[in-house]
Length: 205
Ligand code: TYD
Image (cartoon, rainbow, N blue to C red; front, side, top):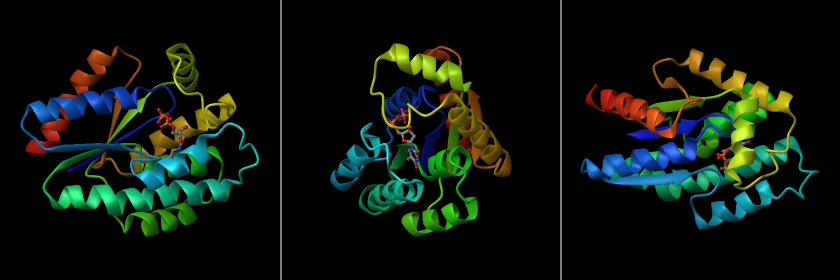
């Protein structure tokens, strides 16, 4: 299965993805945990360009192309080979991030973004997408308190992050068979318990 984690800033995706990977490994699964942008040597270089807060003049479509370039490399080099070898793949963000941030957040044409995404992924869709949902201001607050990386996207206005969150909820509503929205405004332990239950249910089904 390809399981992706999505959600606004500070929703705890990275923590949850790691905890789920450890859990599935303990269950005897072979797991590949990866992330976007990055996850390959080429993708990590692209990530540095994307996240540098000094790159304030980056154009919206440049941003799309760079996220997509990182994604194309990750799908070909990591995700497809792992799935072919029968492994479970967990990805911290995938193409829905482009639809939410560049589409709903920046207002770029969704149909064009879907086309570019198809090219980058060869049409590889997740089997399950867990959307960790949290109000934009709560997520940003967590992010600030957490003291982690503060990247070029984090410094966008609150209104942008609100559009991203609303975008995720809309995307989830459009494809309810693939998406599950999880309330992420709870402790990491509680969220993980829910995530495990949902993933186990999906794997058995
Ligand atoms: P990252 O440091 O991985 O943070 P997070 O914990 O929020 O995932 O940063 C990824 C940032 O890139 C995040 O702000 C969302 C943004 N992003 C896009 O705007 N479009 C995309 O297609 C992807 C994959 C990420």
